[in-house]
Length: 265
Image 1 (cartoon, rainbow, N blue to C red):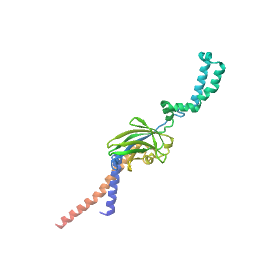
Image 2: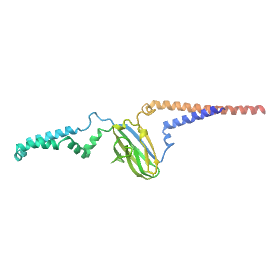
Image 3: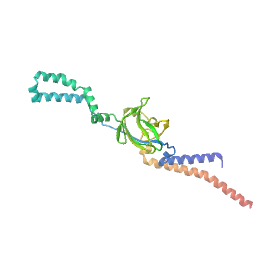
Image 4: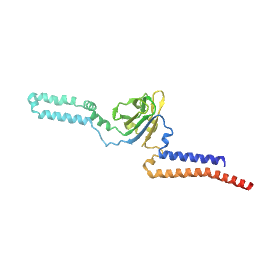
């Protein structure tokens, strides 16, 4: 059997076998690292003009308070008309301006969450695991606005490059963290498969596996289920062809040697 034929057959077998392993989900364990993040990316669509306009809230509150002062009997008897008019024209606009109201809304956790929600564009959820002890574990998350670890809100850090990072601290061997991260507008133009990285102290580098990211080569395999069977069938056919092209020459050569021995005897 010629060398090139043997090399081609082995290449076909390895390629088809690796492809089938990828489709079946078994290839992820081939290059596994002790520190690993398995994440799912999804879009986070919000209705148009979703949120709370501080200017509208400030105007509404000022108008309501001014109207209340006009209709409140106790105030009319306590304060003279000139004082009430000064409060309405000078005091209320200064207390209920956009800057003050926006600061007040940010100080209320529930309202602050609503304001932030209007900026969300993507979510990243998944689990971070390690089979070995790791110190100061960090996950880079460009464009992150909010993060939760094991169901608790955590503060995001900033790397020297200006990129947002999720600080996970020390992780003993066998520990796992469930993470949920909300990304803003700036994350839409990033290929998260390239920008999201995980590492730890002493130069430890982990692996980030992302599902659901848009724009990757072969992404339609997620949406078109029949295409998976098509690719699997093609790889299976290639695998069978590679095995046949490798085994048939060997069988032919063995049969030829058997015939020669028979003729010699």
